[in-house]
Amino acid sequence: MGEERHVRLFRNGRNQAVRIPVEFELPGDEAVMRKEGDRLIIEPAKKQDLVEWLKTIEPWDEEFPDVDEGLLPAEDVEL
Image 1 (cartoon, helix red, strand yellow):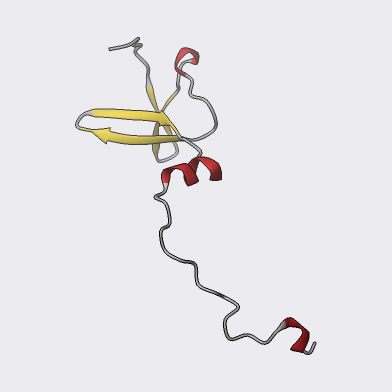
Image 2 (cartoon, helix red, strand yellow):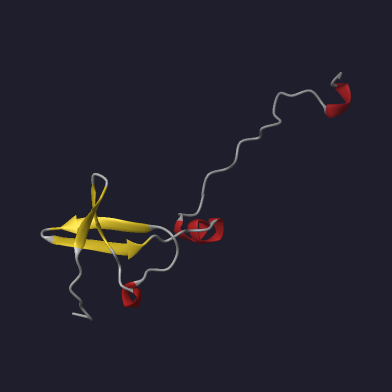
C-alpha cells in the first residue's frame, strides 16, 4: 500500500467532504468516486478524445448503405 495520511472530514452543505492534501492532488478538474466495501476510492476522470475512443471499437465489417440510392441526380433537383 502506498503513502497514507489522516485527514478530517467536514460538512459542505448537506455533503460530507474531505480536503485532499497537496501530495495527493489529482490531475484535472473531475474525478470518479466509487465505494468498495468500507473503502472509498477516488480516481482521476479519464477524458477520452475521439481518436482514443476509435481505437477501442471493433472494426466495422458491414457494407455502408448507398445513401444516394433512389435520389434524383443533383442536376435534376430544383431549388
